[in-house]
Amino acid sequence: MDFQTLQLAVQDRIAVVTLNRPPVNAQNAELRAEITQVFDELSDWEDVSVVVLTGAGKVFSAGADIRERPNLGATAGAYGRHNRLVRESFYAVVECSKPVIAAINGPAMGAGFGLVMASDIWVASEDCYVSMPEINVGLAGGVTFLQEVFGRSRARRMFFTGMKVSGAELYRLGLVEACLPAEELMPYAMDLAREIASKSPIALRLAKEAARLTQLMPSRDAYRYEQGNTVALSKTEDAKEAQRAFLEKRAPVYVGR
Image (cartoon, rainbow, N blue to C red; front, side, top):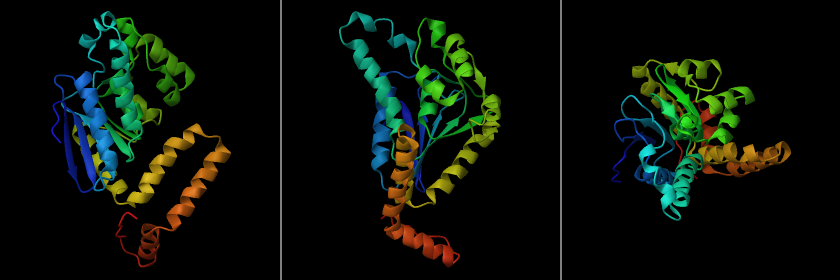
């Protein structure tokens, strides 16, 4: 695929998506459309089991490109189209059928932090921070997702002040798997991706679906739903192969069915 604002590399069942819009990977309409496209397509790629999302340079993403915003209100329907692009780029990551690891290589601000929050697993560099700074430019947005991640007080403090939260603080709060020197970030993320990619593709797909959908269900219904997944998976060739490999003390060879 030919992209203008991001890079895609696929190897050994791992897709690495790199935001690449210098100097700070600010999100304009083109980048958001390409994020939506790449995650929609990766959802259907049978040779991909896991996605790593990161940013080029020293910034993960500085959020929305504020230069697109001032004249939106002057054209009928422009804000609606803009907001739809924002939503769809976020939910393309959330709804991707493959687990998504966010390798936060630098500041992730506003909509940049939104992409992190859309991901399944977070890994941070020591020089990264996250924030929702919209209040500093007279706007407000994103508290919905902040309150899913942080406690009430911290989420609202971040929302009302634009407060920055460092990678080290994210690790202290248990929100990232590791906080590492910059040069160790991608090797760690790739090691984690390889571990995930070694699992049954069909089990991974249902595990990702369950992790997302059960958040919306009462616990009794969620547990019943997961039990249904276990029954369905038990009938697959991959489950039988995994059990044979366990008994034979060897690595399983999955076929994805």
